[in-house]
Length: 170
Length: 162
Image (cartoon, rainbow over all chains, first blue to last red; front, side, top):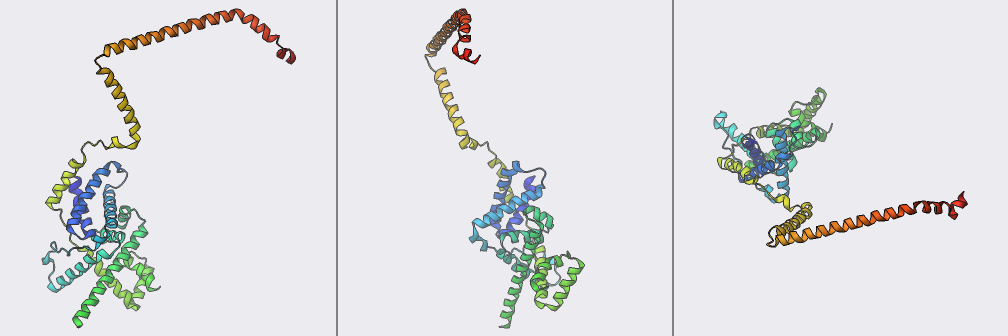
């Protein structure tokens, strides 16, 4: 029941955070071990979904801090689930995939707290209030982290476009 | 408003979360500032790209591993026995168990019982003797009670105070 409901959410959060499939699988297992060990501490007055994601977020950030060197190891952006039929215009499709690849790779340059906030808001499309509960931070802090993350990613897209333009000019 | 202040309003602007007044401020700034206008358009692109990131299903092998976790982790554990706070209690219990087992498993158990009984009886008779002595002492003191009280009342200390 617990695994059926939450494994996909936790795995995707771990994958989007770490950028590597294998690490995300290992982390999902570790997070579930932690969940089982901490279930008795759960306060029934709290939202269980937020509690389990807080636990996941804490684990991801702790792991990131312990293994800083690994943060650069983001694997190729996996486009398997993009359905090509959705895009009538092939040129548009290529542009979109390129942009997603840049953003996917760009996530690694965000600090862990900013990265989690951006993932929860823009990929998982959660409400700011829910993110604040998950990250146990004030609403204003979360909004500011999301804004900072988007600005950093926007600058990465801009830089990438600049490099491409230079290459095509040469 | 300068560019830095406008940057803080770009996400709320993208999400239509600004008051009319601030929205106009941002729009007026963007019209005049190509850098902020460009930043906003890249932010919009980043936001759209993130929203379209694929979501993955959990692989069957991972699911299998996850289902194994509770069985593996919820075995009866005796780790609590190694907590430092419990060590004096455990040591006392071990001593008690040793003494009890030495007694119950001893082949000369009857002899031990006999000796214990003898000691207990000797203890009882000593107590009885002491009790009898104490009683006779109380009786003998009762005979002197009046004379003791008389001599106390007539002592120098009471005479002076009276």
